[in-house]
Length: 385
Image (tube, rainbow, N blue to C red; front, side, top):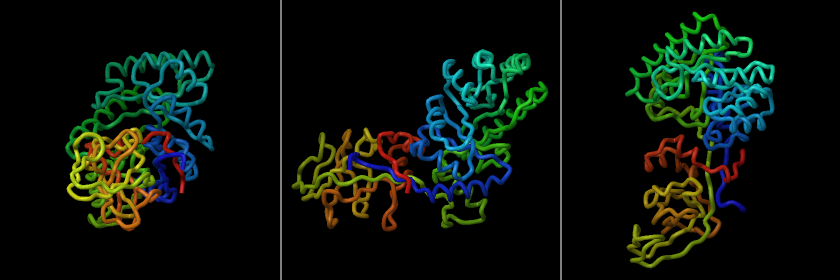
């Protein structure tokens, strides 16, 4: 193969995840598929068409660059929403191509009006409200100033939605904070209603909020990690088990979409009392069969997994030994029959009932599921199976 590893995306798993999530949220809640971060490492060009096949027609991205990729990947008249970065030049592009975007400061609203006037078509905006995340969004005073301006320029603007984001809805430690954010959203929401400015919908919920706080679902949910078959954290999974009147052994209704695989590049037997790879972090204490795998930290396999990580070789779980290199890692395959150049290596995935999960990497490196996936480079080929 030309590439040192490849990613497989399970279409049936994705379909199952969307079906389950829709059943939880109900038919009246619109589904926005969050495809920022290269669709959480899955590839915008792969996930968006799969979602459209399931009649999803709304997609959330972070920036104009991702919005452009989404527009190029779509096969239907789907809506694209930018939740984060967009400069004035990209803003004009967004207005021209009917891409909606968050506004969280008056300067951006004014720039949107200027673009709308120049292009002679309304800018489509979502007003982001500061409810306690303290990242982006209008607070009460800023919102009033923005509403006054919007009221005067209403013919140049279409308010698509009123939105916010919750600060850690996946964790019970943030329960009171999330509840206070919900109250703050209600107050700012009423301010907008009082202004008489029309808007299309309200949306506040990410995967965790939508699953744990039903009142946050409103008109639309913005679902990221859950559509890919992963729970925001174990708390969210256990909460859902209770909601389904199940127990911890109940079948997981979400299926991981992604698998990451490679092949053994080389094998050798190393005598006792030899250091493996760079430095002196791993010393063999017996004759050790090692396999070199052409995957390293440049591919998203963290160097923090040196002497900690595990992969599957020929269906057996084996340890990473020595330091993870930029492009390679070594694994101990002592006692495993049939390991040779070209043998299958599963970095994320399952074989023979043994599963290498995204979560196992995250726990060892103190990274989130989201972070592990988002670090997978675009250069790794992705195939839909």
